[in-house]
Length: 429
Image 1: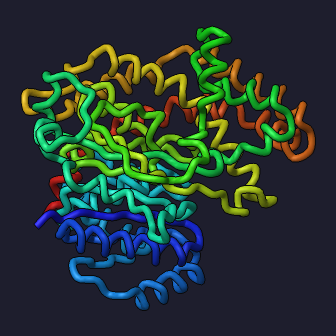
Image 2: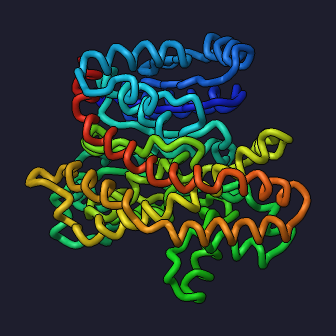
Image 3: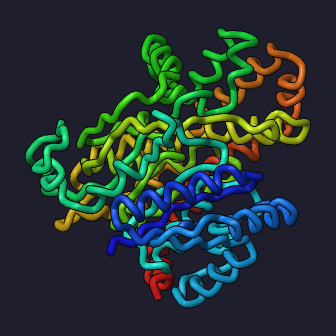
Protein backbone atom coordinates (compact mmCIF):
# COMPACT_ATOMS: atom_id res chain seq x y z
CA UNK A 1 0.00 0.00 0.00
CA UNK A 2 1.22 3.51 -0.83
CA UNK A 3 1.80 5.31 2.49
CA UNK A 4 1.79 9.09 2.17
CA UNK A 5 2.18 12.02 4.55
CA UNK A 6 -0.42 14.78 4.19
CA UNK A 7 1.12 17.56 6.22
CA UNK A 8 -0.34 20.68 7.84
CA UNK A 9 2.21 22.82 9.72
CA UNK A 10 0.60 25.61 11.72
CA UNK A 11 1.36 28.36 14.22
CA UNK A 12 -2.14 29.85 14.18
CA UNK A 13 -5.70 28.78 14.94
CA UNK A 14 -7.03 26.72 12.03
CA UNK A 15 -9.77 24.35 13.18
CA UNK A 16 -11.64 24.58 9.88
CA UNK A 17 -8.48 23.77 7.93
CA UNK A 18 -7.79 20.71 10.07
CA UNK A 19 -11.25 19.36 9.33
CA UNK A 20 -10.91 20.11 5.61
CA UNK A 21 -7.48 18.47 5.29
CA UNK A 22 -8.81 15.41 7.09
CA UNK A 23 -11.51 15.24 4.41
CA UNK A 24 -8.79 15.33 1.75
CA UNK A 25 -6.97 12.52 3.56
CA UNK A 26 -10.16 10.45 3.53
CA UNK A 27 -10.53 11.15 -0.20
CA UNK A 28 -6.95 9.95 -0.85
CA UNK A 29 -7.56 6.75 1.07
CA UNK A 30 -10.96 6.06 -0.45
CA UNK A 31 -10.19 7.02 -4.07
CA UNK A 32 -6.59 5.80 -4.37
CA UNK A 33 -6.27 3.20 -1.63
CA UNK A 34 -3.52 5.20 0.06
CA UNK A 35 -2.44 4.73 3.65
CA UNK A 36 -2.56 8.36 4.72
CA UNK A 37 -0.70 9.76 7.69
CA UNK A 38 -2.24 13.16 8.40
CA UNK A 39 0.55 15.03 10.18
CA UNK A 40 -0.39 18.23 12.03
CA UNK A 41 2.76 20.00 13.24
CA UNK A 42 1.41 22.35 15.88
CA UNK A 43 3.53 25.31 17.02
CA UNK A 44 0.63 27.26 18.52
CA UNK A 45 0.17 28.61 22.03
CA UNK A 46 -1.29 26.31 24.67
CA UNK A 47 -4.88 27.47 24.29
CA UNK A 48 -4.96 27.21 20.51
CA UNK A 49 -3.21 23.85 20.58
CA UNK A 50 -5.78 22.54 23.05
CA UNK A 51 -8.58 23.64 20.73
CA UNK A 52 -6.84 21.88 17.85
CA UNK A 53 -6.59 18.72 19.97
CA UNK A 54 -10.32 18.90 20.65
CA UNK A 55 -11.07 19.16 16.93
CA UNK A 56 -8.69 16.29 16.12
CA UNK A 57 -10.40 14.10 18.72
CA UNK A 58 -13.77 14.84 17.08
CA UNK A 59 -12.67 14.20 13.49
CA UNK A 60 -14.79 11.66 11.66
CA UNK A 61 -12.73 8.45 11.46
CA UNK A 62 -11.86 7.33 7.96
CA UNK A 63 -10.52 3.98 6.83
CA UNK A 64 -6.88 4.30 5.80
CA UNK A 65 -6.30 7.59 7.64
CA UNK A 66 -4.18 7.95 10.79
CA UNK A 67 -3.93 11.38 12.39
CA UNK A 68 -0.75 12.51 14.16
CA UNK A 69 -1.14 15.78 16.09
CA UNK A 70 2.41 16.65 17.20
CA UNK A 71 3.22 19.66 19.39
CA UNK A 72 6.64 21.32 19.54
CA UNK A 73 7.66 19.45 22.69
CA UNK A 74 7.10 16.11 20.99
CA UNK A 75 8.83 17.40 17.85
CA UNK A 76 11.84 18.42 19.92
CA UNK A 77 12.04 15.00 21.58
CA UNK A 78 11.88 13.28 18.19
CA UNK A 79 14.52 15.59 16.71
CA UNK A 80 16.90 15.24 19.62
CA UNK A 81 16.73 11.45 19.48
CA UNK A 82 17.15 11.46 15.70
CA UNK A 83 20.13 13.80 15.82
CA UNK A 84 21.79 11.75 18.56
CA UNK A 85 21.24 8.56 16.57
CA UNK A 86 22.68 10.19 13.44
CA UNK A 87 25.93 11.01 15.26
CA UNK A 88 26.41 14.28 13.36
CA UNK A 89 28.85 17.03 14.41
CA UNK A 90 27.54 19.99 16.42
CA UNK A 91 24.16 18.45 17.31
CA UNK A 92 22.97 21.57 19.16
CA UNK A 93 23.39 23.65 16.02
CA UNK A 94 21.46 21.08 14.03
CA UNK A 95 18.63 21.08 16.55
CA UNK A 96 18.41 24.89 16.35
CA UNK A 97 18.19 24.71 12.56
CA UNK A 98 15.47 22.07 12.68
CA UNK A 99 13.43 23.75 15.43
CA UNK A 100 14.43 27.41 15.65
CA UNK A 101 12.84 29.85 18.12
CA UNK A 102 11.67 32.10 15.25
CA UNK A 103 9.37 31.46 12.29
CA UNK A 104 10.99 29.31 9.60
CA UNK A 105 8.95 28.14 6.63
CA UNK A 106 11.67 25.70 5.58
CA UNK A 107 12.34 24.23 9.02
CA UNK A 108 8.71 23.26 9.66
CA UNK A 109 8.61 21.38 6.36
CA UNK A 110 11.98 19.77 7.06
CA UNK A 111 10.51 18.40 10.27
CA UNK A 112 7.64 16.98 8.21
CA UNK A 113 10.17 15.33 5.87
CA UNK A 114 11.94 13.62 8.76
CA UNK A 115 8.71 12.52 10.43
CA UNK A 116 7.47 11.20 7.09
CA UNK A 117 10.65 9.12 6.85
CA UNK A 118 10.06 7.84 10.38
CA UNK A 119 6.48 6.90 9.46
CA UNK A 120 7.59 5.05 6.33
CA UNK A 121 5.90 7.44 3.89
CA UNK A 122 6.73 7.59 0.19
CA UNK A 123 5.73 11.21 -0.34
CA UNK A 124 4.89 14.44 1.48
CA UNK A 125 1.87 16.54 0.48
CA UNK A 126 1.93 19.99 2.08
CA UNK A 127 -0.98 22.30 2.88
CA UNK A 128 -1.09 25.57 4.86
CA UNK A 129 -3.32 26.86 7.62
CA UNK A 130 -4.12 30.15 5.82
CA UNK A 131 -5.65 28.52 2.75
CA UNK A 132 -8.80 26.65 1.80
CA UNK A 133 -10.04 24.29 -0.91
CA UNK A 134 -12.15 25.55 -3.77
CA UNK A 135 -15.63 24.13 -4.28
CA UNK A 136 -16.92 22.84 -7.61
CA UNK A 137 -20.46 21.51 -7.97
CA UNK A 138 -20.66 21.66 -4.19
CA UNK A 139 -17.63 19.42 -3.66
CA UNK A 140 -14.13 20.38 -2.45
CA UNK A 141 -11.41 20.42 -5.11
CA UNK A 142 -8.63 18.31 -3.58
CA UNK A 143 -5.12 18.62 -5.10
CA UNK A 144 -4.26 15.09 -3.96
CA UNK A 145 -6.37 13.90 -6.89
CA UNK A 146 -3.44 14.78 -9.20
CA UNK A 147 -0.63 14.20 -6.73
CA UNK A 148 -1.09 10.51 -6.04
CA UNK A 149 -1.35 8.66 -9.37
CA UNK A 150 2.16 9.20 -10.73
CA UNK A 151 4.40 10.62 -8.01
CA UNK A 152 7.61 8.57 -7.85
CA UNK A 153 6.84 6.59 -11.03
CA UNK A 154 8.88 6.87 -14.24
CA UNK A 155 7.50 9.72 -16.32
CA UNK A 156 7.12 7.28 -19.24
CA UNK A 157 4.33 5.50 -17.36
CA UNK A 158 2.34 8.70 -16.98
CA UNK A 159 2.86 9.55 -20.63
CA UNK A 160 1.82 6.06 -21.73
CA UNK A 161 -1.38 6.40 -19.71
CA UNK A 162 -2.38 9.40 -21.79
CA UNK A 163 -1.36 12.31 -19.57
CA UNK A 164 -0.66 15.39 -21.69
CA UNK A 165 3.11 15.56 -22.03
CA UNK A 166 5.45 18.37 -23.02
CA UNK A 167 8.86 16.94 -22.14
CA UNK A 168 11.37 15.32 -24.43
CA UNK A 169 11.90 11.59 -24.70
CA UNK A 170 15.21 11.85 -22.83
CA UNK A 171 13.39 12.90 -19.66
CA UNK A 172 10.74 10.18 -19.72
CA UNK A 173 12.95 7.67 -17.91
CA UNK A 174 13.31 10.04 -14.97
CA UNK A 175 10.91 9.83 -11.99
CA UNK A 176 7.98 12.17 -11.45
CA UNK A 177 9.37 14.11 -8.50
CA UNK A 178 6.69 16.67 -7.70
CA UNK A 179 3.08 17.50 -8.36
CA UNK A 180 1.70 20.93 -7.72
CA UNK A 181 -0.56 23.84 -8.53
CA UNK A 182 -0.88 27.39 -7.35
CA UNK A 183 -3.34 29.62 -5.50
CA UNK A 184 -6.23 31.87 -6.37
CA UNK A 185 -7.46 34.84 -4.38
CA UNK A 186 -5.19 37.15 -2.43
CA UNK A 187 -1.51 37.65 -3.23
CA UNK A 188 0.72 34.91 -1.86
CA UNK A 189 2.67 37.60 0.02
CA UNK A 190 0.66 40.05 2.13
CA UNK A 191 1.78 43.29 0.47
CA UNK A 192 -1.42 44.19 -1.36
CA UNK A 193 -1.80 47.28 0.82
CA UNK A 194 1.39 48.71 -0.67
CA UNK A 195 -0.07 48.41 -4.17
CA UNK A 196 -3.30 50.08 -3.04
CA UNK A 197 -1.37 52.95 -1.44
CA UNK A 198 1.06 53.58 -4.30
CA UNK A 199 1.46 51.53 -7.50
CA UNK A 200 4.87 53.07 -8.16
CA UNK A 201 6.21 52.15 -4.74
CA UNK A 202 4.81 48.64 -5.14
CA UNK A 203 6.68 48.25 -8.42
CA UNK A 204 9.91 49.57 -6.89
CA UNK A 205 9.73 47.25 -3.88
CA UNK A 206 8.62 44.05 -5.61
CA UNK A 207 11.15 44.64 -8.38
CA UNK A 208 13.91 44.33 -5.78
CA UNK A 209 13.76 40.55 -5.89
CA UNK A 210 15.02 40.66 -9.47
CA UNK A 211 18.78 40.65 -10.11
CA UNK A 212 20.24 44.14 -10.10
CA UNK A 213 21.41 43.86 -13.72
CA UNK A 214 18.00 43.04 -15.24
CA UNK A 215 16.48 45.48 -17.71
CA UNK A 216 13.56 47.66 -16.65
CA UNK A 217 11.26 45.77 -19.04
CA UNK A 218 12.22 42.35 -17.67
CA UNK A 219 11.82 43.55 -14.09
CA UNK A 220 8.41 45.00 -14.92
CA UNK A 221 7.24 41.63 -16.24
CA UNK A 222 8.45 39.94 -13.05
CA UNK A 223 6.58 42.46 -10.89
CA UNK A 224 3.35 41.93 -12.83
CA UNK A 225 3.61 38.16 -12.36
CA UNK A 226 4.93 38.07 -8.80
CA UNK A 227 2.81 36.64 -5.99
CA UNK A 228 -0.35 36.54 -8.11
CA UNK A 229 -0.58 32.76 -8.33
CA UNK A 230 -3.22 31.61 -10.81
CA UNK A 231 -5.25 34.81 -10.51
CA UNK A 232 -8.86 34.75 -9.37
CA UNK A 233 -10.70 32.51 -11.87
CA UNK A 234 -12.37 29.58 -10.07
CA UNK A 235 -11.93 25.90 -10.91
CA UNK A 236 -14.22 24.66 -13.69
CA UNK A 237 -12.61 21.36 -14.71
CA UNK A 238 -9.38 19.39 -14.52
CA UNK A 239 -6.32 20.20 -16.58
CA UNK A 240 -2.93 18.62 -15.94
CA UNK A 241 0.32 18.04 -17.76
CA UNK A 242 3.53 16.11 -17.38
CA UNK A 243 6.24 18.75 -17.64
CA UNK A 244 9.30 20.32 -16.10
CA UNK A 245 7.34 22.51 -13.70
CA UNK A 246 8.02 26.25 -13.60
CA UNK A 247 8.58 27.22 -9.93
CA UNK A 248 6.47 30.34 -10.52
CA UNK A 249 3.45 28.09 -11.21
CA UNK A 250 3.44 26.25 -7.88
CA UNK A 251 2.72 27.39 -4.34
CA UNK A 252 4.05 25.60 -1.28
CA UNK A 253 0.54 25.24 0.17
CA UNK A 254 -0.32 23.10 -2.86
CA UNK A 255 2.57 20.76 -3.54
CA UNK A 256 3.68 17.15 -3.15
CA UNK A 257 7.22 15.76 -3.30
CA UNK A 258 8.48 12.24 -3.86
CA UNK A 259 10.63 10.89 -1.02
CA UNK A 260 13.63 10.36 -3.32
CA UNK A 261 13.84 14.15 -3.64
CA UNK A 262 13.34 15.43 -0.09
CA UNK A 263 15.35 12.62 1.46
CA UNK A 264 18.36 13.87 -0.53
CA UNK A 265 17.99 17.64 -0.10
CA UNK A 266 16.17 19.60 2.64
CA UNK A 267 14.74 23.10 2.50
CA UNK A 268 16.62 26.20 3.70
CA UNK A 269 16.12 26.59 7.47
CA UNK A 270 16.36 30.41 7.34
CA UNK A 271 14.26 32.18 9.95
CA UNK A 272 11.96 35.13 9.32
CA UNK A 273 12.38 34.83 5.54
CA UNK A 274 9.40 34.60 3.21
CA UNK A 275 9.92 32.26 0.25
CA UNK A 276 12.74 30.27 1.84
CA UNK A 277 10.73 27.06 1.45
CA UNK A 278 10.56 27.14 -2.37
CA UNK A 279 14.06 25.81 -2.97
CA UNK A 280 13.14 22.26 -3.99
CA UNK A 281 10.92 23.59 -6.77
CA UNK A 282 14.05 25.08 -8.33
CA UNK A 283 16.06 21.89 -7.80
CA UNK A 284 13.45 19.84 -9.65
CA UNK A 285 13.22 22.38 -12.47
CA UNK A 286 16.95 22.92 -12.97
CA UNK A 287 17.81 19.22 -12.79
CA UNK A 288 15.17 18.43 -15.43
CA UNK A 289 13.10 16.17 -13.22
CA UNK A 290 9.54 15.66 -14.49
CA UNK A 291 6.55 16.87 -12.53
CA UNK A 292 2.77 17.14 -12.73
CA UNK A 293 1.38 20.66 -13.09
CA UNK A 294 -2.37 20.79 -12.52
CA UNK A 295 -5.07 23.38 -11.93
CA UNK A 296 -6.63 22.39 -8.61
CA UNK A 297 -5.54 25.69 -7.12
CA UNK A 298 -6.06 26.45 -3.44
CA UNK A 299 -7.77 29.59 -2.18
CA UNK A 300 -5.34 31.89 -0.37
CA UNK A 301 -6.30 34.36 2.36
CA UNK A 302 -4.40 36.50 4.86
CA UNK A 303 -4.91 36.33 8.60
CA UNK A 304 -5.37 39.58 10.57
CA UNK A 305 -2.30 38.87 12.74
CA UNK A 306 0.04 39.98 9.94
CA UNK A 307 -1.43 43.47 10.12
CA UNK A 308 -1.50 43.85 13.91
CA UNK A 309 0.76 46.20 15.87
CA UNK A 310 3.32 43.44 16.48
CA UNK A 311 2.59 41.32 13.44
CA UNK A 312 3.06 44.06 10.85
CA UNK A 313 6.76 44.84 11.48
CA UNK A 314 7.55 41.14 11.93
CA UNK A 315 5.96 40.27 8.59
CA UNK A 316 7.59 43.19 6.77
CA UNK A 317 10.97 42.11 8.12
CA UNK A 318 10.39 38.64 6.68
CA UNK A 319 9.65 40.25 3.32
CA UNK A 320 12.82 42.35 3.43
CA UNK A 321 14.86 39.27 4.34
CA UNK A 322 13.35 37.55 1.31
CA UNK A 323 14.56 40.40 -0.91
CA UNK A 324 18.08 40.14 0.53
CA UNK A 325 18.15 36.37 0.30
CA UNK A 326 17.67 36.53 -3.46
CA UNK A 327 21.23 37.77 -4.03
CA UNK A 328 22.43 34.42 -2.72
CA UNK A 329 19.63 32.18 -3.98
CA UNK A 330 19.78 33.51 -7.53
CA UNK A 331 23.49 32.68 -7.62
CA UNK A 332 22.66 29.11 -6.59
CA UNK A 333 19.78 28.88 -9.08
CA UNK A 334 22.03 30.06 -11.91
CA UNK A 335 24.69 27.52 -10.99
CA UNK A 336 22.09 24.72 -10.78
CA UNK A 337 20.59 25.71 -14.13
CA UNK A 338 24.03 25.65 -15.73
CA UNK A 339 24.69 22.23 -14.19
CA UNK A 340 21.42 20.82 -15.51
CA UNK A 341 21.43 17.03 -15.67
CA UNK A 342 24.79 17.10 -13.91
CA UNK A 343 22.79 17.60 -10.73
CA UNK A 344 21.62 13.98 -11.05
CA UNK A 345 23.50 10.73 -10.53
CA UNK A 346 23.14 7.66 -12.74
CA UNK A 347 19.92 6.71 -10.91
CA UNK A 348 18.39 10.15 -11.51
CA UNK A 349 18.82 11.15 -7.87
CA UNK A 350 19.86 14.68 -6.92
CA UNK A 351 23.55 15.06 -6.09
CA UNK A 352 23.39 17.05 -2.88
CA UNK A 353 27.16 17.60 -2.84
CA UNK A 354 26.91 19.81 -5.95
CA UNK A 355 24.25 21.94 -4.30
CA UNK A 356 26.33 22.29 -1.13
CA UNK A 357 29.22 23.67 -3.17
CA UNK A 358 26.94 26.26 -4.81
CA UNK A 359 25.55 27.29 -1.42
CA UNK A 360 29.03 27.79 -0.04
CA UNK A 361 30.01 29.90 -3.06
CA UNK A 362 27.04 32.16 -2.47
CA UNK A 363 28.11 33.12 1.05
CA UNK A 364 31.09 35.09 -0.28
CA UNK A 365 29.23 37.28 -2.77
CA UNK A 366 29.76 41.05 -2.77
CA UNK A 367 27.01 42.65 -0.68
CA UNK A 368 26.86 45.94 -2.59
CA UNK A 369 23.67 44.91 -4.37
CA UNK A 370 21.98 44.15 -1.04
CA UNK A 371 23.06 47.49 0.40
CA UNK A 372 21.36 49.05 -2.61
CA UNK A 373 18.22 46.99 -1.90
CA UNK A 374 18.08 48.22 1.68
CA UNK A 375 18.46 51.81 0.47
CA UNK A 376 15.58 51.36 -1.99
CA UNK A 377 13.33 49.79 0.65
CA UNK A 378 14.10 52.61 3.05
CA UNK A 379 13.18 55.25 0.46
CA UNK A 380 10.01 53.44 -0.61
CA UNK A 381 8.66 52.80 2.89
CA UNK A 382 9.34 56.35 4.03
CA UNK A 383 7.40 57.57 1.00
CA UNK A 384 4.42 55.48 2.09
CA UNK A 385 4.50 57.07 5.53
CA UNK A 386 2.64 55.88 8.62
CA UNK A 387 3.58 52.47 9.91
CA UNK A 388 5.73 51.84 6.84
CA UNK A 389 7.89 54.84 7.70
CA UNK A 390 8.08 53.62 11.31
CA UNK A 391 9.24 50.25 10.05
CA UNK A 392 11.90 51.96 7.93
CA UNK A 393 13.23 53.58 11.10
CA UNK A 394 13.44 50.16 12.74
CA UNK A 395 15.06 48.68 9.66
CA UNK A 396 17.79 51.32 9.68
CA UNK A 397 19.06 49.98 13.01
CA UNK A 398 19.31 46.41 11.67
CA UNK A 399 21.06 46.87 8.34
CA UNK A 400 24.38 45.22 9.21
CA UNK A 401 22.64 42.34 10.97
CA UNK A 402 20.33 41.68 8.03
CA UNK A 403 23.20 41.66 5.56
CA UNK A 404 25.08 39.18 7.75
CA UNK A 405 22.03 36.95 8.17
CA UNK A 406 21.43 36.73 4.42
CA UNK A 407 24.88 35.14 4.05
CA UNK A 408 24.94 33.09 7.24
CA UNK A 409 21.55 31.57 6.38
CA UNK A 410 23.18 30.03 3.30
CA UNK A 411 26.04 28.64 5.36
CA UNK A 412 23.50 27.08 7.73
CA UNK A 413 21.68 25.58 4.76
CA UNK A 414 24.91 24.08 3.43
CA UNK A 415 25.66 22.58 6.85
CA UNK A 416 22.18 21.09 7.13
CA UNK A 417 22.33 19.67 3.60
CA UNK A 418 25.66 17.99 4.31
CA UNK A 419 24.20 16.24 7.35
CA UNK A 420 20.74 15.59 5.94
CA UNK A 421 21.33 12.01 4.67
CA UNK A 422 22.45 10.91 8.15
CA UNK A 423 19.34 12.53 9.70
CA UNK A 424 17.01 10.82 7.24
CA UNK A 425 18.65 7.43 7.83
CA UNK A 426 18.36 7.90 11.60
CA UNK A 427 14.71 8.95 11.30
CA UNK A 428 13.86 5.79 9.36
CA UNK A 429 14.85 3.66 12.36
